[in-house]
Amino acid sequence: MKTVVAAALGECVHVAGVVNFLRLAEMAGWRTVFLGPAVPIEAVLEAAQDEHADLVAVSYRLTPETGERLLAEFAEQADHLHSRGVRFAFGGTPPIASRASAMGFFEQVFDGSQRSEEVMAYLKGKPLSESDQHDYPQTLVERIGWKAPYPLLRHHFGLPTIPDTLAGVEQIARARVLDVISLGIDQDAQENFFHPERQDRRQTGAGGVPVRTPQDYRDIYQSSRFGNFPLLRTYSGTDDFIRLAEMYVDTINIAWCAIPLFWFNLMDGRGPWDLEGSLREHQQVMRWYGERGIPVELNEPHHWGMRDAPDVIFVTAAYLSAYNARACGVRDYIAQLMFNSPPDTSDAMDLAKMAAILEMIAPLETPDFRIWRQTRTGLLSYPLEIEAARAHLSASIYVQMALKPHIVHIVGHTEADHAATANDVIEACLMARRSIENALQGMPDLLSDPNIQQRKDELIAESSVTLSAIRSLANSSTTDPLTDPNILAKAVQLGILDAPHLRNNRFARGQITVRTINGACMAVDSQGMPITEKQRIAQIQ
Image 1 (cartoon, helix red, strand yellow):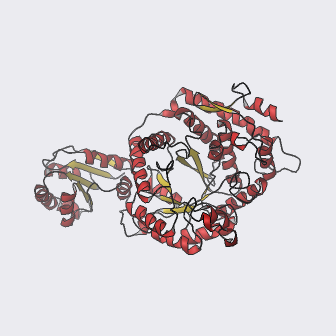
Image 2 (image 1 turned 135 degrees about the horizontal axis):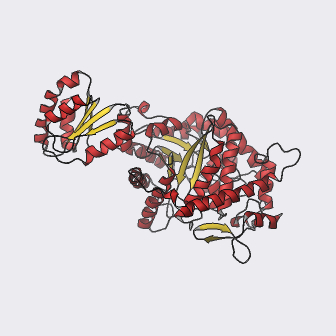
Image 3 (image 1 turned 45 degrees about the vertical axis):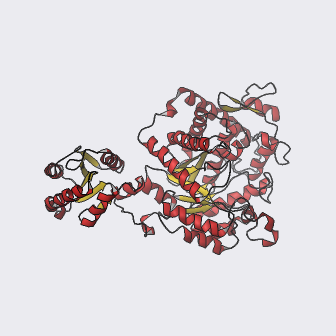
């Protein structure tokens, strides 16, 4: 274990920056020695020698002229340690930092503008350079490991014109606050990219950027090659899935695939395939990405939640997602955990639901099937008032940190009013980062709440009933009912998997009734009383 000795130098008594630096050093695996405020030069160097320091970090935040003279004296007296390979870093206000950099003695100078992950990268032996893409890992799994214990930040972005999107992507990249830009493309690009004859020019830019050629994607990718060189990803589309996948890999080095099981088809009006056909297509897409070692996310359970499905169906859908991903050969699976869906779900019951999901899918994990946790705020949960929306974003992400996510998918605070601009994205990221840093400094163990644990166990037990009901649909020719498109489609048609918003849908039953009870979304009978899955399923079979 490497050792870092740190102090506020000379007459400087300001140690907040030193303490924060040492906290990050401990996260990065260093042994830390804190000498305190106003430490004489001789005492710092003596401690560095006694402690066999690999790195000596000093801070000074007073008058620049005084600081410059002090640092020159420090460098002169520390020369013998410097020549023996001891490293030296400095932290201070921008005017003093500028003078420290000019001395050429310090390996790294921090002026307070650096992000936490930049400091962490330095402590892990990877100094950052704004101009070098190689300093920033360009695959998802590598970047997760590089940034740990901080989660990656992801945000959607896509404006109604290509030029505006190009400028916005570059602005976001240069701000160095976002790790993954999820490119929001318009509906025609999702469904009709390879079919210009089917495109409707009147809807150009509806819902995102109107990409129409592979070069559009290449241009957007090049616009992201600045700042912290964020990863890019985009929708998997609703038709021509493999052709789109091939293009995404070639043009934007897609960070991961996101695709549902039951959605983006004729059932929800977002694609040309029927339910069973889209299930087969989505499984084929998962296999394609799995064969190439590209991670896959099933953006599935929250689509049930956004349609007011009860928590037990949300959890069941999450299990089916992970189960199908593994069966299709996916090696790195991203479990998406959308909070606030439905919007009136309480924080406690949200955590119980997500804890149930993670406990159910944990046994699926193997060395060849790794699970990465991604949390996000509910798409439909934002208030219209911008101040309230900012508070909701920050509070929701703080609660999500109880799950120790590897990725935080930030849903912009402007969502209820307008699609996020580049400035909106940057602002949302700064709010999210503050919530995350607060949590990492030591948040309460929210999951230990007995009510959360009780509800988690209840959801696991109830979801097992739902899964058993799906398995019971198997016949003699069924290999695995939980991956069979015909069986899965039948589970929706019969109402084993159901949601209130599916009423009058020709692919689904849509007869389930739900109520929010004590913060949990539950199936209820005609009198509004909660019913178990056994009771509910008995009524529909």
